[in-house]
Image 1: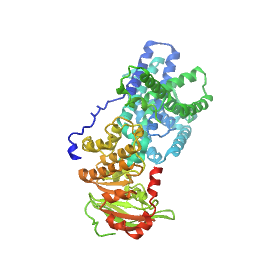
Image 2: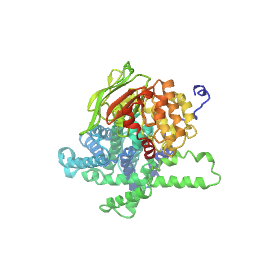
Image 3: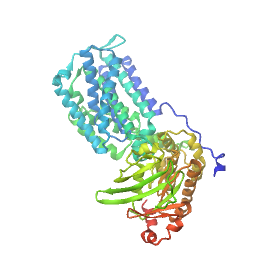
Image 4: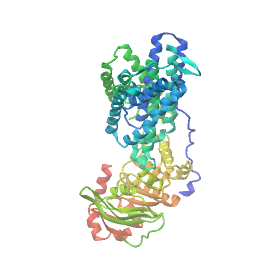
Length: 350
Length: 255
């Protein structure tokens, strides 16, 4: 066999790309939000875009953990930590710089997630889910009880306007700019992070026993991801507090975690674009059908059941499947695209 | 334990290891040594504790008593990934690949996790070619035929460039014609990579062909050790094991 060695050639290695097609598309769409305040002054559109971006950024926390098949209900907890960090910094210390506050809103939850992750990530499957849910309840309780710092049931109000390079970002359209900046940061971090560690996350999702046997210290990557997910959630918390002009426990209700999970799963957990698509679709739908308040968690639950039964790839998975079918149906389809199909299948986890 | 297998630097040594799940003793006071670049066959009827032994030696399960040494380092009870870093890597009885990833990405994952570079893949090229994995380079692992998935899993283990390979029934579920691939694999691992191999198998022909030494487990005890020609003719071994020749087929079917 060794004399064959000289003639056996492996297929050419593909150059690893910085980001994949879905990631670029998602970043472009999120980046487009910067243009919305320029294109329109319609307060309805501005507020709707704001809500979608915040929801999508929050749902990224779910997306990151789902990359390793871990269902996290902890998003509102870390949003609260990020949001309250910003509120306290600006109220008590007078920090108003958007970049400084953004860094704080990311770092604080990420740091809190390190010891928590160390405790939680020993748990598997159902137990992990349960504990992350309890975590949001505990944070909720702390927000009410630690009144000197958090304002208790009154929350924190009267924060000075956020500034960027000394310019106050006060009115509707400027608030949207802040949100867009935070969302763009969140999406960029998530895209680069999940892309860089895609082999590790895929391996942990599909077969962690095999990954460990090949030398991968799975818990390190889970802990890292938990921490980054917390940081990104914190950015969403900042955006939410900045939009509502108040940091209040009810903004971070434990049940809202169901919404964030729904956005990711309905949109499609196989690609980051799914999270954005899911948030955009469902936030718009919630508004259209006026399902604000009590009904939406129940309906979202139903939607999750339907999607997991009928289309596990979510909206993006369905779209990719349809696109693949069209390409195959067209007679001009070159044969070389058929056997690869790696891009499409990412959205369609079996 | 026969004296023919002597301990030396870098050897994998089981030192009177025992394992019990609650009151159930899976195996009891088993000792053996696998010298560096050596090849040791492990046989025994179903339930003899063979897979449990691999789980223990790789670090997945803790021992009840005794110790496992790689060179001078005690490795039992350490995390699996830490032992893999030390060069002790196991394969799985069932197919073990990352579904949804291409053959190429599966191999790249193995290289990444073991902190090896792509040159290892070039060295493995003749083997990949022989198994027919190069033709399936960009196909997803889970759509490959069973035998190919199995060979992919084995090649991934080898791509980590282990010092010691623990192979858990590599031939199980393979057709007779595919089993020659295991011979090629074992030979390649020893010759090109200098791996020591612990080969757990039900296929007696394969054991006879490949292994200079075998140990026999039955009911959790080590009942015989030595060259296969000698050991497999012993009456107690035949009684314990070789009487049930249909076991092999049953095993192939359930996989």
